[in-house]
Length: 146
Image (cartoon, rainbow, N blue to C red; front, top):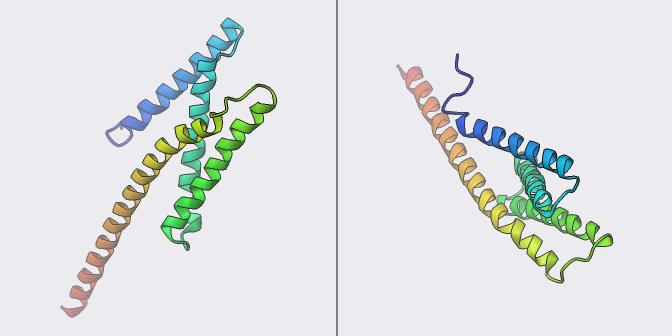
């Protein structure tokens, strides 16, 4: 039995990379006694990756709605989280006048790209399942006629 195979190789590499990177950030913060902007940015990317993946994974709960509306709702929820994440630190430090726009753009471009890839893959998977179902129905129909 193989624990790592061609189906889970890339996800395994990604998990290992993430664990090592987060471990490095935590150790650096402890050893250096400060939490720098680079560490914060890396963990922010991890947080938004987690939130984006979580929200995309919940699409089936809104399956009664048109896909475009689902995509827009998901984006609005995540954009609100990004803006909230930018707004709260504004109580403790000054935010650049373009800070909200920059955070939204930094989030929007990769999220929309990932969402398009995700929904395209989902569409292809559904199409493949539908073809398989049609094939099974035809085989059963042929069996009944024989």
